[in-house]
Image (tube, rainbow, N blue to C red):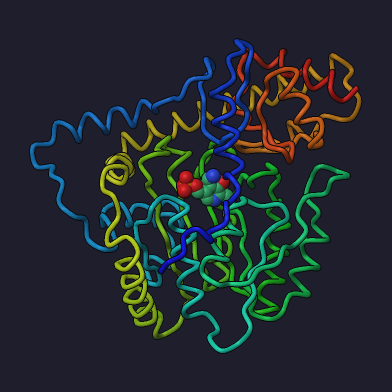
Length: 408
Ligand code: PMP
C-alpha cells in the first residue's frame, strides 16, 4: 500500500498565501504590495492594449484551431523570442548556435534548463549551482526537484541597500570550477538591484576564469528601463564574449500574460566549427525532456506574443505599453521616496528610486512588515519586498504614513 497517511503536511506557498490573506481582508483601505503583477493607477489588472488587439486578430482568424503545437512550441514564437532576447543581429542566431523551446512561462523555462543540466552538465563530477542571496524563492525548489545541489552568493548589502558587488564576485571566484551561476538578467527579484554594465563585465571575467556556466533568468525585459535592448544588455554582452549559456525567458510581466504561461528556454553554445551540430544534439535531448514533462506547450499566450513580436506596428505599440508600465512604476518610486522624506521618516530612502523594475527591497524588518499588515492592512512579503505596481496616486501617501509609523 502507498501509505498516504504518512505524507506530512507541506507549508503553504508564502506568496500565494499572502494573496489569499489579502483577498480575505475586508478593510476598505487594504493595499496589496505582494505579488509581482502589474496594476494600473486604480489598482486593477491591466490588459495591455496591444494584447487586446492581438487577441482580436486571433479571435477573428478563421484558420485558428485547437490542435497540438509541436513539442518545441510555436516556431514563429520561439524564433521571435530569440531575437527579442539576443538582439535581431545576434551572431549566435546567424551562426545557428541557439536552440529554443517554448515553455510553461518562465518557471517552466527555469525547470527545463535545470532538468537538462541535471541530466547532462558535467556528468560524473560534483555539480553545484549558485543563486543570488536573496533570489526568487522558486529557484531553490526547482533545482532541488531535479537533484542539483545549490549554494548562494552574496548579492544584497543590507548596509547600502544596493549590490554587495565584492561579496558576489569573490564568492563566484571561490566557487568550484564549472559551477552553474544563476543570474537575473535585469530587474532583480526581490531586490530591484542590478549590476552596472562595468560590474557585469567583471562578473563575466570571473565566470570565464573559473569556467562556470551562466544561467540567465529574464522575467522582466522591458520592465526595468522601459527599453528592451537596454534590459537585454547583460545577456547580449555574455553572448558577445562567446559563453555557452542558457536563458529562461518569461512573458508573464512584460506582456501581462501571467496566467497564459508563455515563456521560452534558450540554449546557446559557443562559436566553434561544430556549434551547429552541438546545438542539434542539445535540441534533440531537450525535446525528449519536454515530451515527457508537458508533451507540448499551451498555444494561446504564445500566439498572442507571437502576433505582436512579428508585426513591426504591433511591436512598436508594445514598446509604448511597456514604457507606460515602467514609467508609472518610476513615478511611484519618486512619489514614495518624496513622501517618506517629507514625513522625515527615520533612515535614508534613496534606495527606493535607485532600485529598478517591479520590486523594491524597502529594508523593513519582518516584524515591521507584520505590524504594517496588522495596523494598516498593507500586504507585502516578510523580507520587506514591495511590488511597486501595487502603489498608485490614491494609496502612496497612505502607505508612506504606515511605513513612517512603523519605523518610528
Ligand atoms: N524568474 C523570476 C526571477 C521571476 O521573478 C519570475 C516571476 N515571478 C519568474 C522567473 C517566472 O514567472 P512565470 O513562471 O510566471 O513566468
